[in-house]
Each structure stands twice: as C-alpha cells, then as structure tokens.
Length: 248
Image (cartoon, rainbow, N blue to C red):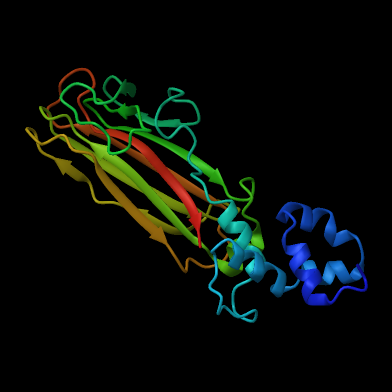
C-alpha cells in the first residue's frame, strides 16, 4: 500500500475496527503508526458514525481518538442496578429496621416503572438503609490521560418512589475520588421527603459532574432512605435503575 495516496490510505485504515487499528495496524510500519495516530483518521471515523459534523476540524482542543473510544465505552457503570441479582455488587452501608429487600414491580401500593426493561426495585425499612458501590474508572477503561485532560462528563441518575400509603425519605450522595480516596468533587442531594398518601410515581434525580479537575480515579455512589410511618417491614423509599455514565 506504499504507492497509495495518503488520503486514500487514511480512508482504508479508518474502515478497520478501532481496537485492531491500535493493537495491530499501528505496529506495521512507521507510516501506518503516524496515520493511526493522526487526527484525520479518527475524525473520519467519528464523522462516519455521526459523532462529528462534516465541517469539524482536525485541529482542536479535543482528541478525536479519545472521543471515539469514549463514545464506544458509554454504558452504565453501576452493576446490578435493578436488583436482579439481589444485593450482589452492593455494599450495605446501613441496614436499619428490617434492612434492604428486593421486590417485583409495581409492588404493593406502587406504580409501574417508566421503562418495561426494569422489573425489580430495592426497598428500605423503618430506619435508614443505605447502600453503595465504588467504580474504578481505570478498570472500566477510562485511562488517566482521558480523565485528566478531556475531563468527560460524569452523569449520575437514580430513580426513587414511595408506596401510595406510606411516606418516605430519600438521599443520594456521589463523590469523585482520587487515587488516594481524596474527594475531588461531590454531589449530595437534600433529604427528599415524599408524603403519606402520595401518588406512588417514580421520580428521577440526576446530576452531571463537569470541569472537576485532574486526578479523578473512582466514583463513589451511595443512596438510601427510610419510611416516615415507622411500620415494621418494608414501607420505605424504593430505588432502582441507578446509573453512572461517562459521556462526551
């Protein structure tokens, strides 16, 4: 392919899957390495997949290669977000009252979830119940240079509801942590109170971290709640479909 015009060779290489480009094609020769590392190739791949407009420029603050891989890695980093595996992957920070329980939607005196893909939820008791997960961003494929220079958005979402016949309290706390567990940025919701005799509807809470600075290596996610009628059993806040995503 040495006789091919460079623009044509870029188009040919851009059609190769990204992982093979980096792990195989980049090692063929110095010319291919330079092309695989070039902004032109990754901008072309982004344009083909609708991640960049036709008028986007090669030169800019963002690395098209990083942005391409970031989009491909976009997924929910919370494991077992809907309780299909019980409490697996969650750490029970606090288990007051009768502790946590998993129930099938819509549950007693509850409403269906907005998405048909969600079938279960976690429910709290008559004293505070909290559970958490720690997301290792490097283990999930978000390398240090990406987090420190691009600083992609970290989008946090959670869903909570109450029984129609019981009031409840709900809280969400999310921290961005350094390698040494220092807090780089934090979001802590207010204590949200849902009254007794409510509609039982599901509510979404969301927060987006931006411009948080270098050094973020972990995301600590914690949520919880309790009922406000202090009935034995599981009449407290219901939570499900929690998510943490890293986005453009």
